[in-house]
Image (cartoon, rainbow, N blue to C red; front, side, top):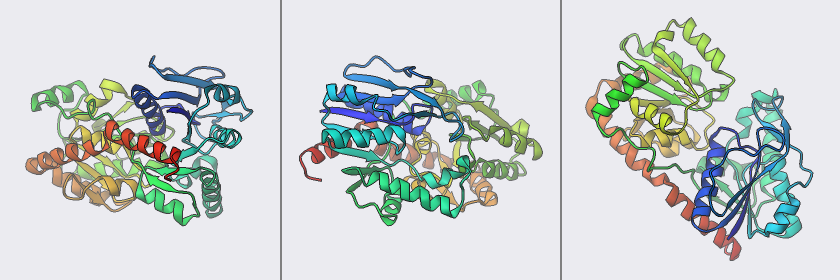
Length: 388
């Protein structure tokens, strides 16, 4: 198949990872793929491996920090029209409902090409960034989002909770749940306790440790993790918290740690990737998140693949990934006392830690790149054969 993929972001985030890695895998399977994305600067091409059958087309853009920090805005003036016409794809796949996404909609209509749209997240949870975090703003966000995806021939969602919300808000087009994927051959547990101890030393960890990984932004509720950790330290003073990632909330989180007088027990690593990221996860004992905004959490699955038990809020996507009392524990939202209690329970039971670790790895294998992309291929073929 010839597949044109459109995305409004090629920044460092979960959507970019899914877009790029899916394009790579489809190309490796022999499909011809064109990836239309925004570069970091005007006419700049984002870094990408040299892969057969995969061509990246960087669209001109302008800074959009006034809309969302570190993002850029494409002007939908038809820059991709000639490139798409020459390519003549069988399928167009759009990943975001913004300016690049609208160009995908228009091109699909002009050239009568089937259009697949992936809806990745609950956009109404991000409205604080654009100063419209009000009821009317949430209604407008859903109306806009559903209006966009009703122009697609097939809509994909990474979780049942997001798919159900879309249907409740008025989506009428066919929808399928297609979970996000990870590289389960790269994200693996530490090979031995000895290796784990070496990695702990490398990252400055000297005792039991808890890790959060992801964008440092208000909607992730990382302040709840820090508050829970402050409670945990009252009974486990040697514990440490590693926070992997960066974002607009970092300054506030550092200030909160200082206010609670626990800064010496918290490590802010900044953004990590590749081998360094995997080793950081392997060095820790438990992964935790208090986010209420996850449609599907890649970070949870990556941590699970590295054999980490999970302590998370039972909310939306994570509720479909983590199995309570099997590979982790669920806690109530905005309840740092309960989070601290569950982390303490795990740290105090080596047997349960080992049991949950093995279960996490087993469950993570369901989200391998090979399994998910095979399902994506079948969805493309079903659409082309008019079975959807």
